[in-house]
Each structure stands twice: as C-alpha cells, then as structure tokens.
Image (tube, rainbow, N blue to C red):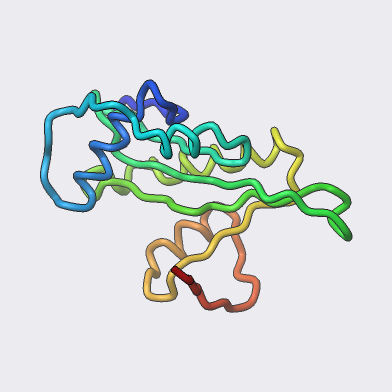
Length: 149
C-alpha cells in the first residue's frame, strides 16, 4: 500500500475533517470544502501544536496530534513532546501506519531538541500498549486521565 504522511494545515483540513466524521459516525461523506472555522485556523497556527495525517487512496486514514510543552528548571529549557491522539482507520490497521505516525513524533522530538516524548494510554487498550512498547516506550508509573470542562 502506498501512503504519504502530511502535516495537516488549512489547505488540507477538509480531508482531516472528513476522516474525523467517518471515525465518529462510521459514515462516508463526500469531501467537504466548506470554509475552515476561524478557531481551527488559530489552532493549526499554534507553534507548539502539530497534526500529521496518513494519506492513502486519496483520503486520510489516520492521524497523530502532538503538542510540545516547554520546560525549565531541571530540564534546562528542553521540553517534552506529548502524543495527544493517535488513530488509524480499522480497515488500515496492522499495516505499519501507527508506527509511521509515531516516527513523526520521534522526528519532532529531534527537531525541537526535546527531552523525550510522553503519552497516556488507556489501561483497557492492550493493543495500543503493545504498539507503544514495540516503538520503544516504557511504562513509567501509573496515572489517571482526568479532565475538567
């Protein structure tokens, strides 16, 4: 399978939006070329936010979103990259796409001279845990994922 990994920007956001729609609803829709909302434009321009998507068969079939968080103190001005989301369409799994997306995290770490890459994985998702371990991630304690709205 031929694929390409692209940075998601305003010009290709419609493909990303279509993929998210497919993931959330399980339904296909024709490519949307509606204007990109101003809030999305702002997020895509954030210098510490990175989204990469896998282009295969003229559509996006997976993505990784990453955030860089600067650090001071013991980190001496070198922060961490964080994997916020990683998803691959079930029809495209087990083809190396998730590993290719995680490679983008490694490249970003090097580009930013970051200390490391951090992520959270659901304890009920052993397949994701195995993927991360195969890519060199190690468990470092336990954590709860908490949110406030």
